[in-house]
Amino acid sequence: MFRKYLLSLCALLALAVAVSAHADAWPTPTEGDFIVKDFHFTSGETLPELRLHYRTLGKIHKGKNGKVDNAVLIMHGTGGAGTQFLNDRFAGQLFGPGQPLDAAKYFIVLPDGIGHGKSSKPSDGLRMKFPHYDYDDMVLADYRLLTEKLKVDHLRLVMGTSMGGMHSWVWGETYPDFMDALMPLASLPVEIAGRNRMFRRMFMDAIRNDPEWNHGDYAKQPRGLADALHILMIMGSVPLQWQKDYPTRDAADKYLEDRIAALMKEDDANDCLYQVDASRNYDPQPKLAAIKAPLLAVNSADDQINPPELGILEREIKHVARGRAVVIPISDATHGHSTHTWAAVWKDHLVELLAQSSNEP
Image (cartoon, rainbow, N blue to C red; front, side, top):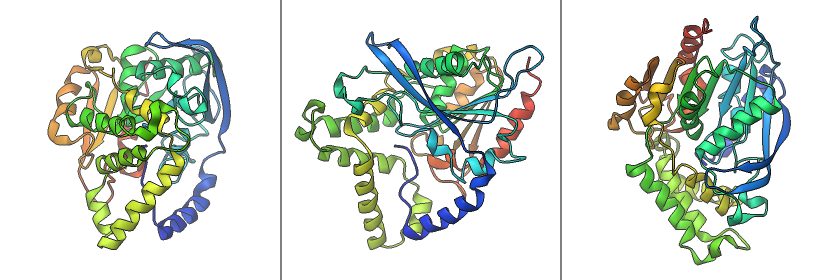
């Protein structure tokens, strides 16, 4: 859900031209599914078969010690999927020849988290009977995908955007010897509280308090989903860019109407509830000192979900032995919370991190 909002027709055409010009910059991904039998969730619930969908680019390489030395895990944000990285803004900046994560050198893994994309989710049929997963479940599922299905026993880099950024912190302290480097984007390493928790609660209440939701047994998407999406749009908004892109009342109204109409066709209320609720137990702060690998956290100053005035990132990064934090100033190149997907803005920091961690044992 924290994905870039609907572009205008002209912008879409321009993007299509750019993608067609650069689509050959990265190889076509290989897609697959991994079925985990009898998956146990932290809630105590189980699922007889958990389907995890994934995409990979490149080939595995093993070092002299026999371990994989070129695997990169990239995790998406809330409501997203691995496909969100396969565009000119991200893959076109990172995965091509000579670029920081050149797919000819790296084995890149783009999973769909539990409850997202083509992985198992409530809208597959269980609706509100689907297990109530959290971030620990999602990280464990990705770990099993890597180790059991893809035979990856070590990661060169763990990277994630938004929710995936939060997963990166969890990865670092849960499997501290499994990676050479970590790069969480658009996230904070503390319990979700304050305004962040309040907007998530408002999002969920907008759906659950709508009689049309009917405890998850609806025939069509409830109107409460639209109310929830309005809240999400405000939190993910980009004041500087939106003022330039929609400078009149009519332009702003049209964008809002078109965006909500599109999302109502794409999203499912139960899936959205689970996706937002999955953050309820997230709190890596007490174990930050367990992170061993170099970690570079990158946020942007116009991110209204993780606003810089809180000072949380600067305070907590001190607890990470080899941690460093960067907050990118607002500019014409930043896009609010979604700056995490505009790799041109921060890829130089990625290059620095890869160089710093290149001699990790």
